[in-house]
Length: 328
Ligand code: A2P
Image (cartoon, rainbow, N blue to C red; front, side, top):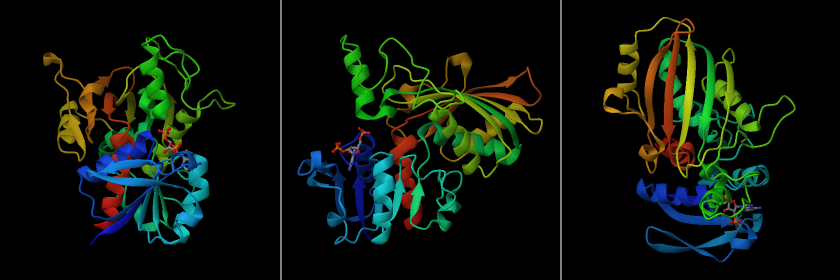
């Protein structure tokens, strides 16, 4: 069976990647529709070697099309306004923005972790935050086998996570130009600030990681804290994850667990300088886990280093994998 697929925000960083991943994975598409803002209407984008014209996102351009699946990455306000409109015309929306993620009526899904949650969707399925996706893929096998008490996240996030503007700031920063997207230069620097600050001193990105992890792992008892940092890397988020497990563990069993976990590549052989880095993850859909070691400062403590391509597994590929699960 073939499906009519729409990409909303097709001219953006993740939108472009949706097209690349849909083509690569040979998603069964009958008709492809591309939407962006009025500014981009009439522009052409390539999909499998053919030109497709970008349409302005407005209800008149949606209502006469029979869209089965709409992949959204055009910002939160666009999702809030337009996801219900697509659903009204019988599409299933997979939304990459943060707009719907914590809505109790909307499932938040990572296919390796909680694919069953797609079943109770009423039309919108949320794609988690990029940093959360790779974290929960790494944490799920531990949560299932040992139980988790507490998590400390420290992230090192690529500029592409901030869209085309973030990417351009790093590129132009190396030429000595001032930043447009970030509040400070990112070239040769790092910025301990992703998304806006809240009254409690956390950033929204940090709270997203905390709340989304609990929702995806179906565990409100988890105690979690996070510090999220933008670093001068183009693609690939890295995370130091400190986990306090509920039960004692043997390190060899953890290695074995990761050798056999879906969507994970174990890269941990420090004698041969093998550990995950953003350059390994770029262009791939797997989550890389390494630097696995006991945290001797607490009982049942474990340290992990987790890397993934933030635009692929952290965004586009995860959404396309959800779509693949839906049509399976
Ligand atoms: P456009 O290119 O026409 O501005 P990124 O996060 O990489 O900057 O991409 C954002 C994407 O969201 C782009 O495709 C952008 O389209 C799209 N977008 C932004 N605002 C709107 C809007 N109001 N309606 C539709 N698409 C939008």
